[in-house]
Structures are given as structure tokens and as C-alpha cells.
Length: 343
Image (tube, rainbow, N blue to C red; front, side, top):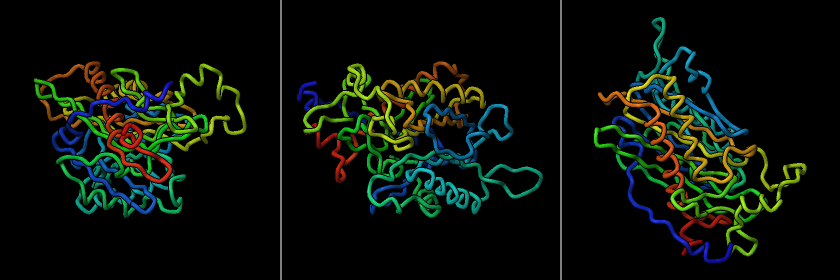
């Protein structure tokens, strides 16, 4: 791939955010010292939810309860965080926030128990690994939650996100992005994604690499898929001889809609949304990623929607959010941004 690849650009048009699904609020808490942070997607009254985990190195909390055969059918919030397994502690702060306000699942006359699934990404190699999201980080994100425009790039779970780490190459800065698709009949399908992949990030409309692994001189994209076809990184060494350790990556996100569905349908929508990951990340769902997508339904639309259509739109929203997460990111030491590389 010649140097013109780094000069190419992708148009970034305003496309809304996950808060366009009425009632959803989003809050970021960012620790700029490292950086790292967490992002909370709140729907306090309870949204029907599903989940699908495709990566082989996940870090999650309360995903089992989202299985269609299990009892609890609604969540009050979903947490996306950096910090690897340490970052799951952010969900404790979200539980505390919701508990103080009386939100949660009620059973047997006991106080409501907030239902807060979570997923984390690995960003511990960026800055001081001892600085991690905590319960206070999660609480702070809730306190900052808004139903308005959502910040993107180096905030919340995207603060320490990076991309293009396979094959021991020169990676770039990832981030968090969000988008929405509004239909004429009032149905909204939206996504928010923290992009921290081992692979390259592509513009799905062209297949062109827009961020990812670069050549040693930093002037060209390495093109991970092309390198693998040429045999690079195919032989397995102690750590996969690909320059990336298990769990040192992971793209995590939430898709949401106001269409009314049950847990089974929301699980299917989460599964289909992973198509958006595969279109925008190459390779995706690897042994080194813990790729996880949650799907939320507020059920406020009176329209009886087709689950396949909403799943297809969720995939489109997810891929668009991935592109935005990378394009809105800012450089940090050792990880140039899309804007820096593309000029």
C-alpha cells in the first residue's frame, strides 16, 4: 500500500447519537492522567436487553442474566469501561447511583436491585496501569449523564482506546463514537461503540483503511489482512507472534432502539449488530479481542417492528459509530490520531 493511503480521508457527517432514542442518557467519566475512563448508558426505568459476545478475551459482568431463558428481563444501565477486569468496578458505582434513587428489579418486597451489565476493554498499556476506573468513576459518569449530544473520541471508555495492534506494528488512537438512524415512522436505531481493536478500522462504504497498523516508518498502512494473506503472523509463537497479547484490545458497544421487543429478539439484534463490527474492523472477533455488544429496547414506539430489519440497521449504526470513534479521537503520546495521520 503506497503513501497515498494515509492521505485519503472519509467524510464525517453529523449523524446523531444514542440519546436520540428517547429516555436514554449517556455519561462519561474520564481520567486524563492515564488516560482511561468509563461510559454509562442509562435508562433508569428499565430497558429490555440482550447481549452477544464474539471476542475470545471478554471482560464482562451480568451477561448471563440477559439470556432469554433467565428471569430478569430489563436493565437499568449498561457500563462500558477501560481498565480491563479492574474496570468492572465502575458498575458498582452505577449500582449505588441507581440504588439511591430507587431504581432496580423488585422481587419479594425487598428494595429494588439495580441491574447493571458491563463490559471492559484493555487499555492498561497506555500510561500508568495503576490508574483504573473505579466505583467512583461509574458514579461520576451517572452524575454527568445527559439526554443531549454525546461527546466522542478520547472520553469515557474511549479515553485509552487504541487500534491496529496486530503484527507488532505502529498502532493509532481509537476512541468512542455514537450515531443514530431515524426512520420516517418514528423508529430510531442507534449505537455507541468504544473502539479498541487489534485490527485495522475500515470505511465500510469503500473498504479503505482509515486507521490501524502502520509500517515502521509510519508513512503507510501495513494492511493487516494483506499481511496475513502474505503469510506474516501466521506461524504461532509464545504470544501468537502477532505482537498482541490476549485481552489487550476489545471493542465494546451498545445498540438501542425504541422499537418494542422481548429478550429473544434483542439477543438476535445484538448478534446482527456484530456484522457492523466485521464491516468496519479487520480482523474482528479475534482471540485477542473481547468484542461484546449489548442491545437495548425502550419499547416506546407504537410501531410493530421487524426484528430482522432492526438488526440490519443496528449493524449499520454500529459500523458508523466505529468510524466516528476513530475519526473523533485525538492523539496521545505514541498513538497518533486519524486527524494527525491524514493531515
